[in-house]
Image (cartoon, rainbow, N blue to C red; front, side, top):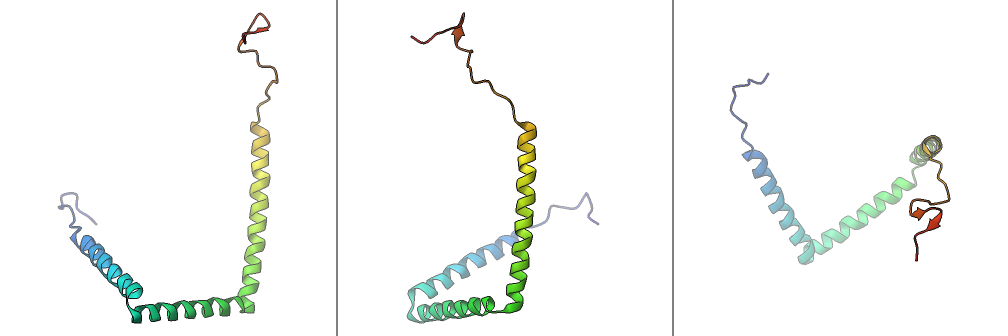
Length: 111
């Protein structure tokens, strides 16, 4: 349990980690984009990622789960749409087509 009289916690560890992450991220980005080895490594990683995505698409168990998920999404979408229609119907306000706000004695104030 925390004590109400305890001093405020020191956040220097978080700031140090943030600064270290920024420096390492910038160095990694520079390496991957501006060196020949980095460009080759980046191309290799992209190829591996493309192969992994294709192998996932070919997995029949995963395809069945995706179809089930799509079915659930379609059911949820229809439920939300019907609820939105009921709310719109319940809250709709009848408007009159004749605007009489800017009229005087039945005549328009337009010149």
